[in-house]
Length: 90
Image (cartoon, rainbow, N blue to C red):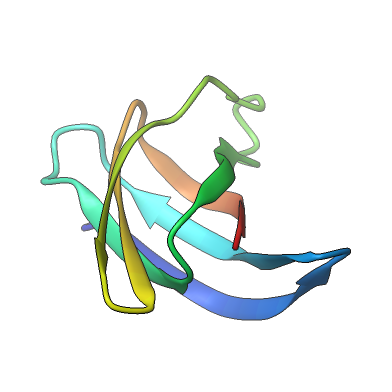
């Protein structure tokens, strides 16, 4: 199961933007990516909702900005089949 996102939604959070949704991934897979608008990331949280127990650790990620889009690269830290994520950005 490669890294994938689904049910991705975008909204506003005060003066900031928020992108959130579901994700899946396997620790041994290549890093996954998701693009968001703007050039600053304030919070990037990817957590597991798997029935084996919630796993939530500080997500390792890097960013790269081109124009008005920032690509967030996520480095999987566990096997996750039912995950949720939120990215707060501007």
